[in-house]
Image 1: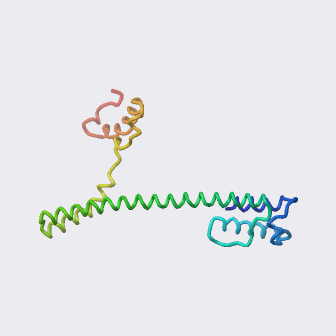
Image 2: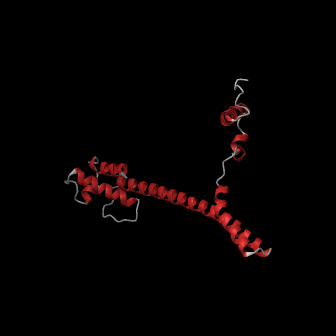
Image 3: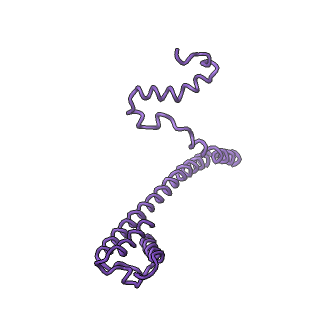
Length: 178
C-alpha cells in the first residue's frame, strides 16, 4: 500500500496541468506528510470495505484508481482462493480419517464385535491412524522421478542410500570406491 500511496500522491503533486484530488479536497497547501497520510488512507481503503471521502479528480487519477481496484480485486480473490484450497485440503484429510473410522465402526457392528474389543480398536485407531498417514515420502510417490535421466537417479540413489549402507554393520567395512 505504500507504493500505491506514493503513486497516488505523486499523481497529484507532479500534475500542474489538471485539477487533482489534493485541490479537490483542499489539501494542496497541507504539509507533505499529511498529504501522504491522506494518500495512504485512500490506498488502504481500496483494499478493504472501508470508506474514504478522497477520490479521483481527473482522468489520470480515475484510470489509476480503476487499476488499483482491479489489482485489489485480483489480489483479494487470489488470497481467498488460497485459503479455500487450504481449508479443502484439511477437510479432505479429516474426511478420509472419518470415513475410515466409520467403516471400522460399521464392520464391527455388522460382525457383532464386543463393545470392549470395539473400544480398544477405536482407541488404537485414533492413536495410530494419524501417524500412519504421516509416513515418509518414497521415491515412487514422486511422478517426476520417472522422467529423470538414469544418471541423475544413480547419483540421487548414491546420496540417499549410501549413508545408510555405510553405517550398517554388514557394509561398514566396504570401501565406497570398490
